Amino acid sequence: MRSVLLFIAFVLSVNSHALQVEVHDPVMAKEGDYYYAFSTGPGITIYQSEDMINWRRTGRIFETEPSWARKDIPEFMGHLWAPDVFYKNGRYYVYYSASAFGKNTSAIGVASTPTLNPDAENYQWIDHGNILQSVPGRDDWNAIDAAIIEDDQGNIWMSFGSFWSGLKMVKLDPSMTKIAQPEVWHHIASRLPAVPSKIEEAGRGAIEAPFIFKHEDYYYLFVSFDLCCRKENSTYKIMVGRSKSITGPYVDAKDVQLNQGGGTLVLQGNENWTAVGHNSVYHFDGQDFLVTHAYETADNHLQKLRILPLNWQDGWPVVDPRDLDHRTTNLIE
Image 1 (cartoon, helix red, strand yellow):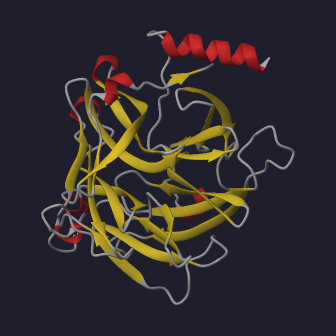
Image 2 (image 1 turned 45 degrees about the horizontal axis):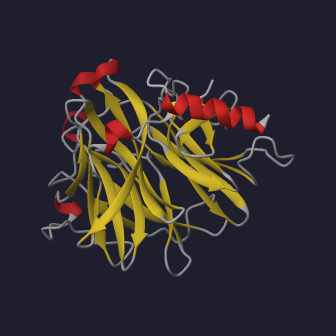
């Protein structure tokens, strides 16, 4: 049976008409011989692959939705946003967001499982609930787009945020399901000169989707500038800054701080891809990869999964934009 599946995967990989994986906000993990991808959607959609090219759906984290979501976020419409996956203490933790679109009525929750393999006997997702919430009129930040990293001292940090006053970072406690006490927050990136007081002002601060990756002596903070989810009007692009301290300040290649509007371009849209953004970065099998979604012009600007080799030049990440066309991801139904 395994040989048959591998043959089908090979045929699909060379078939230009194969369905591609359509995702928003992709993140990845590897367990055993399999890669797993998680994306925004009802229940958080999960995909599995042996080669990072051919993927099959394996289900969702939630069959319906978290029990707390509609109570805490009354305008929640069923789609869980922007997951991140992190392995610690013998479990895989997935952080996700419930939010009202265009508002900072938002919360970050977390669920965990001892394995990502849906065929394993101990495969079971347990929800740990709401761990961080933003409230309009009270908060000048937005509790979405969580990303987790462990520093060199073993501390676990969660970065998050979208628009408003920008991106934040806070330490998690050892349980991975709570904010460490006492809470100490760090402001790591922003595009606004001052704290916005209205939604329309927050919309000018188009920055979101933090993801921090350690390479050699630096922590690299990847962010998305401008607008997603608007088909041909999407303007998403990926920017980066770096710091030797995980809490910053992060600076771009011109030494402009990201919390003062700085950012060095990594990848942007072109004539074939309207926009590129909400990325993550991983080291798999001796190579670094940038994982992102991109809107394909030729397919009504649908969002597609792209996994692109990421290399380093003079201490900065480099991605070949031609790989957007050359490195496809196929969906095995």
